[in-house]
Structures are given as structure tokens and as C-alpha cells.
Length: 178
Image (tube, rainbow, N blue to C red; front, side):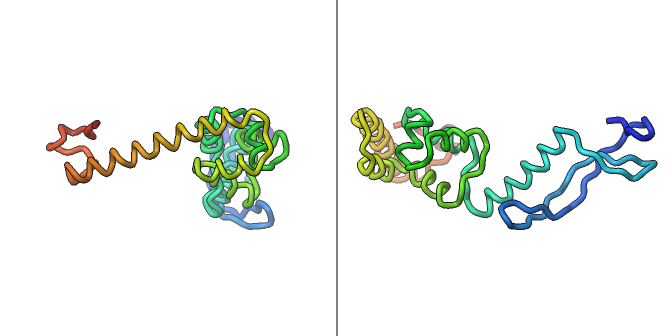
């Protein structure tokens, strides 16, 4: 990026700064352009977004708030629409979609989303919600529960027979598939 004052190419500088998100301060390694001649600092759209994401990531990690990809994967494993997932969790109609697109959920909503990752817990939430056609949702939950039991049994058998579930020379450097 060229300096608007001198027209010379500016360098990207990193500096640790305190930033606030939801009334809480975090130390973030900020990225910005610095004009060598004037000392002025600038951010373009990319650096501004990077700095903001670094702040959000620290907040998410501190409070165990799922990242957008995790939120999408939770919903997709049940083959539900974002609006249907919002309804099950008791959010506003578009809340879940917004969380999937990067908006940071509140800590209480984040806990509900984490709970929904467990099919047993989602079943409880579905039963509390008076949904039409919830049989399809319950069937998908049952399917996931069966898969979980099979995976748990497979891991137990691997450990029992091979005393490990990690690849080794004994397993041909692969996890044995039973």
C-alpha cells in the first residue's frame, strides 16, 4: 500500500495492543501499514478484518465459544436447516445462521450449541420443543447414536485386541478397521 502523504510504499508493522470486545480487554498483535516518513498508521480492509478476527478468536477461546465451522458442522450432522436448529435451541429465527456466518454467540447460547453437539442432549431439546415432523429429526439423532456406539465399540475392541488404536508397525501403520 502506498502512503497517501508521500506516495512511497509502506511496510506492514505488528504491535501488541489492547482491544476491547464485550467490555473485556484482550492483548492483540495488531497489523497495520506505517509510513516511514510521517509515522502515520493505516489499515486496509484486509488488515482491519484480520485484527478483528484475532480479537474474536481470543474471546472464543477464553469462553469456549464454538467457531463458525464448528457451529455449521453441528447442524449438518443432524441434517437440519439453520432456522430449524434455531427453533430447537430457542434462538431467534436467524440467530443460528448468523452464528454460522461469524457472529459471536453469547456465552449462554454457545453453551446450548455445545450441548446440541451431543445427540442425547439434542434429543431432550427436541422433545421439549413442539415441532412438526420431529420424527425425522429423532430418526437422524437415533442414527447418530448408533454410529457413536459402534465407534465406541470399535475403539474398545482395538484397544482390547491390539492394546492400541494408533497406527504402528504391528498394524501396518494404519488403524485396523474391524
